[in-house]
Image 1 (cartoon, rainbow, N blue to C red):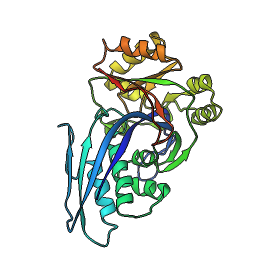
Image 2 (image 1 turned 90 degrees about the horizontal axis):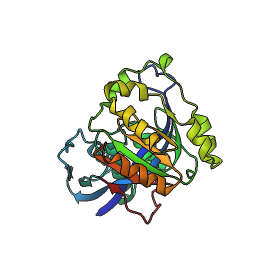
Image 3 (image 1 turned 135 degrees about the vertical axis):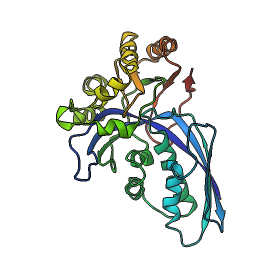
Image 4 (image 1 turned 45 degrees about the vertical axis):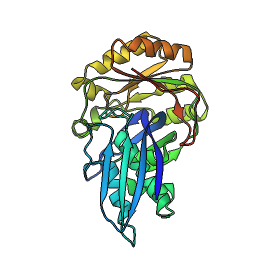
Length: 297
């Protein structure tokens, strides 16, 4: 059997980590949204086989057991009574090592797809808990809709659609290692975020309040390794963004605007400073469709 799944990128509108668990893993408090910049994952099952293969249209990703999509297939394969192999073909559009959850999105797409093909009948909640064993962003990517994300990343509480807005996304040339950034976290020194205020603003459809309380506690850590983050962020604000910040552990920066004309101006202005620039909207759910095209330069 075969199935294709959309794998949207994610952005963090608010990110905080108030403490570490005894095993050293961070506790997360985040507001996350999926965006209309997606990989596309084609999944084909092979009867009487245990082999899992992954191929992509980019040479930047491992295609063996280090690939999160491979790990997702292996995880669900262990739940089968009969052997079935899996062929995974990933059409990449999400920047790699960008803090946008590309690998996690692909893994979540494999979980959703194989859950359907193999009639496992697992709920989103069950898939999310299972997904945590792959990576902390995979549970959210199973949902791919605006949500409050807590715990180690497995507690997903949908919060409804964002206020209408456009997002301009820019990735510096530098890449950042998430484990390296996480090892440098000292919770007592972080600028802790007002995450619940962002949740409230979204539920109230209050764009100005959301902009006021947005923030990313990891931003100062990553900026030390990638100074281009602050340059791009400043340019976005200079060109008219209502708010701008880093997503995840970085180095991707995004700016938001209620007006398409202003967002387009920001997008066009940034093309001289950054190779990878995108103009997108947020997704209310995996079924959200928009008439516009994603722009990339």
